[in-house]
Image (cartoon, rainbow, N blue to C red; front, side):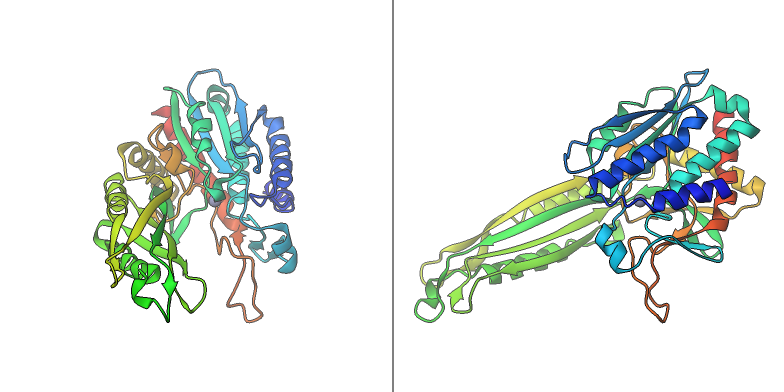
Length: 394
Ligand SMILES: [Zn+2]
């Protein structure tokens, strides 16, 4: 643990905000150096987005062709200026370690190192047999679809599993592994009307804001908690000055679902709103026009037999170790969404922490920044090791 925590301290000290290309690449090189003594060789894969750093692939060829992929990411959501402004940096308070990326996800990357070091000394045959493929996304926090291709190109039929090291969940005293994640689509709806003088020719106008107001009600009504579908109207703007009937208004938002079916349903429901609107000019019936664009789509990761099979191994290992473990379906995305249908995938294998994506601290302690609990590393590493041994033996 002392070596693992020192590695984590150095990783947290390197700002790797997604938009900080140099920082991400510096962390990537440092990570490669950390794993090199275990026999890993590094490959850097350019992102399709030139503003982002390179993805990192570390490989250690085993004696067998069976492989296991360990997945993490390099980037965090904290720009350097924000870290400085909030004095958000490595800070140990008892068992708790605050700092950018402590659990999302540098703690997960250190977990990978910890379990490989332990396997090398405690289960050397397994360690030497398996071909290990460690793959880091440079830009997970900004949705990076090309990373799915980077992974798929390195999976093959003898890849036993893809293990994702996002942090674990917690419910009471149970540690929660992630077996499904919602997919997310983002959208933009533009209402175009006809502008006119609000005093002299009011009836000649077709009010785009009024039209968009009607349309966003219909969008909001697509939410269906029963089928795990949420639709959020996130932003809205329109019009220019008060003496014009506005000719344009735009809303943007997202939707999330656990299943491909509900995802398709939501998408179809949004697209069906396109076309002629109900709001018309009283003078001549000129109708507003509604345009619907789907901006991004990241697919759901639904419950599936491959994931459930892995979860059973982790659950058995937990029972044998006397650890309370359960599973959860999570609303947020991870790289698991990109790869679950290529190879059996399990997520939430990192340590436990909380307040991810938060950098602020208030004097009364009501706001605390991201942290990880150091004592959660060893039990989780033991669980991961025991389950990997089951996976290898299966
Ligand atoms: Zn993450």
